[in-house]
Length: 400
Image 1: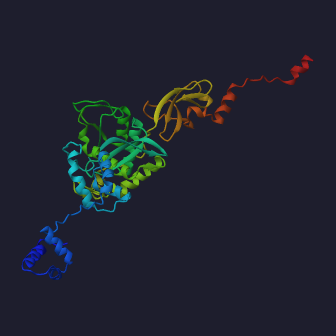
Image 2 (image 1 turned 90 degrees about the vertical axis):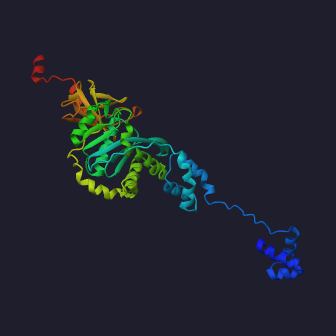
Image 3 (image 1 turned 90 degrees about the horizontal axis):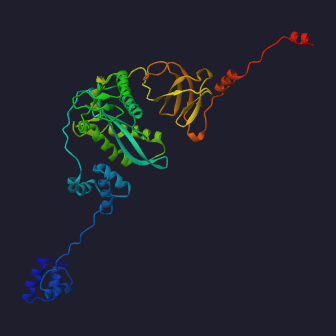
């Protein structure tokens, strides 16, 4: 293939009467190349073939992740490399960058807090596979306002008991308690929201606060973005942890992977706002956290029942035995999140553990049938057997 400069030489030599084979020898090309150039009276216009990108086959997957709210290019790169992408980071970033204007969001002014001052709490949810079934997973995220170190715990409910359990697990993971806990206006914590700074908190949430030594705080109505740091972490977990992990053998397996990911990735990340490694910044905040209480708060469901005269109580569609001495009495029932059912005599405060544990069962489904402890039945039979009068044999001798 000859260029414009070569054709200029061909044309000049040809006009001077030089043979075409000599021109070809001069340019080190075939004589036919010279002949064709003279016939078309110009150089060959090079047609540049547009080369394909290594990213082309994965653009659909990238768009899919963007539509799911995953905008972190490092996370996307990891995902498509797992599917075979052999290209680099720059070409991926170049593809994503023009699309960022489509990203939903709203600027939020973030207020920095002092070390140990505040922990923000919020809930998120995703659908993933747990134990072979697609399940809605609720996860509570609790983040320290100063260091941005956070913890999250996954479960199947967002009710009050799971909220308290999630907070306690975060305190235990962080090794201490912040001076105040900021929550949204969910009923598990706030019974009545207020714009004047005096909301009415759930009584059990207040009990938890008293035992752990923090001050409960609530966002003003319609101002949930006051918890901007924590809400951002909900998105961070969805776009990172739940992109990397999508299938879990059990709830226990899910939470084990969560804590592993927290230590290996979230704690060692460079936080974008404060420009520090989270774990290093946390070391400065840790001395300001309050110590954990000696006794763990009981997050069990608390209910009250009237024990029937046959020695059973009814709980969630099934019946559970109690000692004969408790029959006919009012008892307190605590149902742990682990499925342990404990029965107490109903002395003590309504919101405090009763004084005397009288029976323990494992919570069963309605189809599993009644739960009966052998010692309870033995006591019941003993107390209900008819009493036989004892007479001396001399009485019968007199009759004879």
